[in-house]
Amino acid sequence: MREILPALARWYATGRPFGLATVVAVNRSAPRGPGAAMAVGPDDEVVGSVSGGCVEGAVFELAQEVVADGEARLRTFGYSDDDAFAVGLTCGGEITVLVRRVSPEAEPAFGAVAESVVSHRPVTVAVVTDGPAQRGASLAVWPDEAAGTLGTPGLDAAVTADARGELAQGATVTRHYGPQGQRREDGVAVFMESFAPPPRMLVFGAIDYAAAVARIGGFLGYRVTVCDARPVFATPRRFPEGVEVVVEWPHRYLGATETDSRTVICVLTHDPKFDVPLLEEALRRPAAYIGAMGSRRTHDDRMERLRATGVGEEALARLRSPVGLDLGARTPEEVAVSVAAEIIALRWGGSGAPLTATSGAIHS
Image 1 (tube, helix red, strand yellow):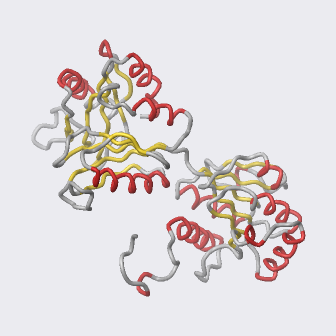
Image 2: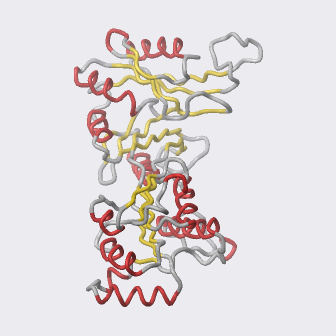
Image 3: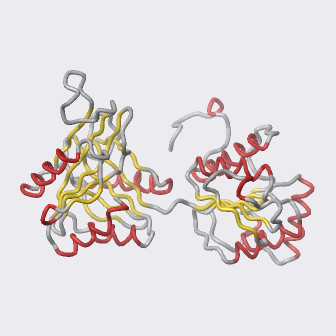
């Protein structure tokens, strides 16, 4: 929806309803993934796409029907072995599309959602797609508030909690619930689409370990930047495609960079002239994770240097050093896995212990 939002906001501001079609499920090969959207607005203006052209005609007609009667529709389009020329995806895939009517009366929170997406304020939109609830009912969930309803307080509370979890990852998923919010495979199907800027991963030190950490950071959904003051090492060709590479003194770059509670900072230089001013700056800032590479001797020396600069014990307790979980890692790739494991464990409160050594629910 993000790419068609300017048109949707313009239509919404006029008060005239429009039909919004969203891909809520994909099976096998398909041109677009969950969250792909197409809208039919006033005067039958069309924006967006749900399939790259295969089923847009059928979705256009559905959207017109939805705008006319207000009843949301759920339709599955796919390749038919019996009739390959039927409306569907001749690539062999299958998509399920929810088409709902959007207007200030039907979705009072839509304007706030649109504004949040434009301003990069994280928000998740949860919509009932199927089951014993009103199809098309929506709930907008921000980190600190929610608006709308899916039908019952219990369902709203459960979806709000789950939506915030998905928002932390920027995920788009479908979950199933009972009428009061209990998890059930055959219950109310709720599609959650998260709109959040990807969290930042800032990697300092353009070494081989940094390339491996940057690679796994991208895999986990972070927007990765590698920074080093040495231009001979900080070159884009040494890092995965899509990684930003910056030549600058690390503490200067961090001082000019905005961080938030999702930001991950990995200090891999293990050189006091870089580490100490950088960590002094990092420990003053909001961040989900601050880790520093080095031996235990390096760690002890670094801590004393930081204390000498005036960094307090409460701030020092935020520092994960030596970086990573104890996996016995040796290679840069293995070390990157141990760092990623520590980041994930810290995010969700995991112990880092083998699951075979624990009891109770795996996911809290």
